[in-house]
Image (cartoon, rainbow, N blue to C red):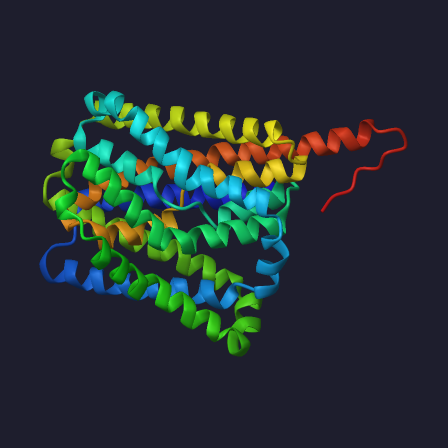
Amino acid sequence: MLRALKANLDAFTLILIAVVLIASLLPARGAAASGFELLTMAAIALLFFLHGAKLSRQAIIAGATHWRLHLLIFVFTFGAFPLIGVILRPLLTPLLGNPLTLGMLYLCVLPGTVQSAIAFTSLARGNVPAAICSASSSSLIGIFLTPLLLMWLLDTQGVGDNFAFADAVGKISLQLLLPFLAGHLARPLMGTWVASNRHWLTWVDQGSILLVVYTAFSASVVAGLWGSVSPRALLTLTLVCCALLAMVLWLTAWLARLLRFSRDDEVTIVFCASKKSMATGVPMAQILFPGAALGPMLLPLLVFHQLQLMVCAVLARRYREAVSDASRDRPGGIEVTR
């Protein structure tokens, strides 16, 4: 299972890099750019419709009762993460410049991932029902809370007048939340089909991200993205994302142990609270930011996303191996696989 997951992640990472290269060499212009924008909006609507149809109310009820775990994940995702961004801003601006620093702040206010957080929690033998509930609710709450946090952060930058919160929430609700609710209402009719054809959701999920990335980077390349982002800045951004990821992984594990959560709950907290969603962040950025500014806003998210997938794959394996070793070391213990 681990090998299959890593192979899938590696393949998508390579495809994503290829899409960025194609957009850099052959960006969409004029009518082609408009066509890609319409296609991207349709793909994103389909993606959230299928997510709504897949979500089980039983899974929500099963995981929602663990309120202490969900509260910690929520506070870290939408409280500690943005606070880290604000604290680090004086250091980031001289290193990255203002556009990429704003991209880092946008990264910090995003909700957590859904699919990968649940997959890694399952792989590491954590509390999967709680992960399903926490990750799903994080994405829904983020539709409203991310623009609000972003408005506050932009106000601290002195450019908040250009950000219309009500308009942003309205557009996000129309393009993301409405298809999600429609899909969930259609679950009695198509829930079984969605459950038995999960590969379609994976294709739509990854395909919509690739479309948004190509469209966003095309607009940014046409506007001179790579003339403003040097290789040195890109390397510095990668190192900053590495440091941020290491910090949040350590903090989430430390907090889980400090608050005496079980080992299974610790796994869920680490993988749900430390990750940021590209599936939500990319389409949301397309709504919130104009075309030319979209590339620098997305670049930190793209870098951080790839790092979190690779690092969390290794971390999940270590969590799983620790359970296997403990089972073998126990007198008369038998290793049980899930």
